[in-house]
Length: 141
Image (tube, rainbow, N blue to C red):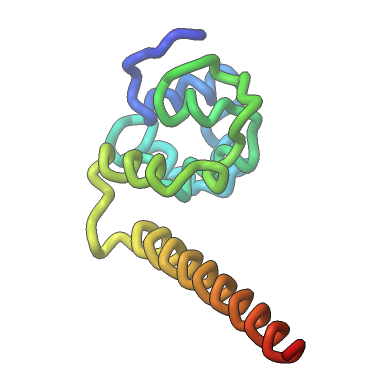
């Protein structure tokens, strides 16, 4: 399956389980997803959360791009294997597309908080470098 398909993430999860040749029970146990949640996902009663997708990616070799978008092949993923390799924009697009992007969404808040902290740390390190250079110049004088 090398072309983009229109299956939902939930249906791709079901397709992947069938491809693995394991029962839903075994898949749930292997990933740490509750049987009830997996059942609801595969029957389209619940949407797969970031946590569910991460558990699948952490426990099986599956093309993360295929899992999220349907693009590429089911098991070939040389570039990205877990959600930590996705950009904040890619994750936010996924959350938005799945109607999960709300201010109350803890994952979204963690992503935004992390981005702000990362940028703050970068600025502090930059200022620290400037101070060190200034101290060295003053020490030479």
